[in-house]
Length: 262
Image (cartoon, rainbow, N blue to C red; front, side, top):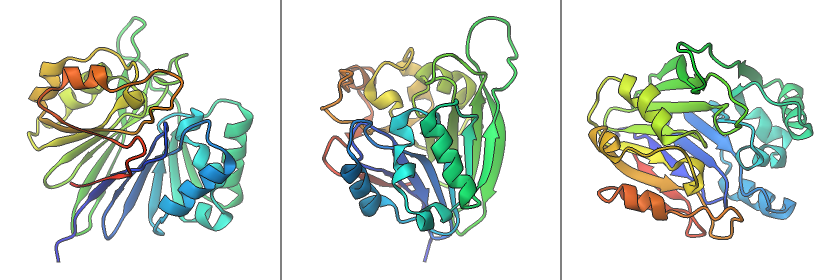
């Protein structure tokens, strides 16, 4: 039986929780949900969706509440199923301190990555490749982790993840920007033409300039948005749909998690 990779974008309200899984490995990218959900709602999301293997790697894009709050709803046993965490160095907030303590208490290995040194002068936030890893199961997965040069904007002080499988590619940006993903990740990749799956940055909200032709040249096939109409930020998918008329677009928005075989 051929092992396949599955990208899941979980329906967690206006937050971010994604996984890439095979029979051999699982990568979690963010573990958050809508920041205004109550404790009972967060626990329900954990009960419905957190079915981690003992080989899970958790990557945290950045430390906004809607990307991390499900971590606090995990049991101690569930925390122990996360073998390692890769994340930017967290801010000194009470929430971040509680999360780091939970990982330390359960002996979860932490890799907290400092901002990269900029290569160019100026104010532009850059992304640089800091980590690569190959999961050599029946379905090989090549993982590339990019760290930003740091920013006072929490969305840009972050980690971006790019994944290649035999047949497809996946780009997970958290809330980082479209133009930075093109310039620092896709333009510097191997020039592959396999279909590209991307989780929409910032839940469909403002996320930098969109160069439609560049995305088309990189074989963007599907955009998946984790969002909710009930958000208070007026984030919609209208601007995204207008920029990518050729692309398949899916959204959670209370319709259930989106599962893609990649």
